[in-house]
Every structure is written in structure tokens, then in C-alpha cells.
Length: 205
Image (cartoon, rainbow, N blue to C red; front, side, top):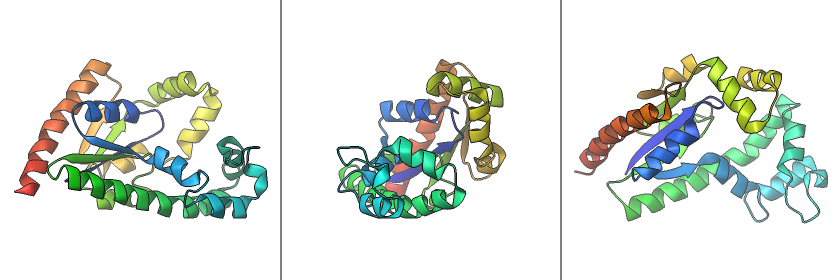
């Protein structure tokens, strides 16, 4: 099983690339979804998060209100680090479980982990190949404003808190420029997929 990381800045087209890789036959794991699972009642990070931040983060049905939690941690870098210390280990364990399951089902397949902070958490060291998506700053801003209904200032502030694209690029085996039309981006993904297939088959021989 070939392990592939997929990362990139806010609104740089990761989701589109992940969907194309899935369409081509890759097993795609979304780190955000695992983070949500870890914070659900019964999830590994649920009780530690409630203990740390208090019952005020809970909705009436006992589920963690992610907007309330986000409002707390994004206003305080130290609290964000504390939350990450709870959630990230749980997410990593869920990732490993899924990778093992995929490997058992499809030994010569390709498993992709899509995560915004793959490099920041050091998880890029656990994959065989890393794909980084990027686009112009103006494209990022326009996409994020349209998708998330955020103001230009909010988007710029969020981008400013992320690792610069040029830093992530240093770790990449493949870089996909998503400024181009989607049909061209899809072709670029197909080219990378063909290379990954060769690597996956070769690693199993």
C-alpha cells in the first residue's frame, strides 16, 4: 500500500484534487472528518475537550458545538495548542487504523490522507509521496469568500496564520497549480495518479 499525503493552504483546491484521486480509485482519508469523529460523544478526544473547556462548549444534546469551541481556541493560540494536543493524537491513531484496513483489503492500492496541516504536524514524514496544492493569493481569497461567506479581511487573516506555500512546496514530490481550469487540474491529477500507480505496484513486488 502506497501512502500519499495531500495538503495545501486554505481554499487551494485540496478537496477537488482529493475527489479526483478518489474517482481514480485511491482510498482517501479526510483528516477533518477524523477530527470531527474524535470530538463526537464516545470519541477519544470528547471527554478531554469537555474537561478542558467546560460544559459551555456543549449543545443541549451533549454534542460539542464546534463553532463555540472554535471561537474560544482561535482567539487564543495557547488554547488552540491545548486542543490540538488532545485531538491530533486521536486523529493520528484513527488514520493508522484506516491505513491498515486499506492495506489489508488492497495491498497494491494507494491510500491518500488529505489534511491542511500535514506538514505542520510532521505527518508528511509518514507518507511515501506528498502532493501540495497551490494557487494565487487572489484566487484563494475569492474562493474562500464565496465558499465560506467570509469577509476578505477574515480570509486574509486565516491565510496569514498558515504555513507559507513556498515552505510546503519544499517537502512536495508533486505540486498542483489549481489556478488553471478544473479540466486541466484533473489532467494533472491523472498524470500524478499514473505515477503513483507505478510506485504502488513496484513497492509490492
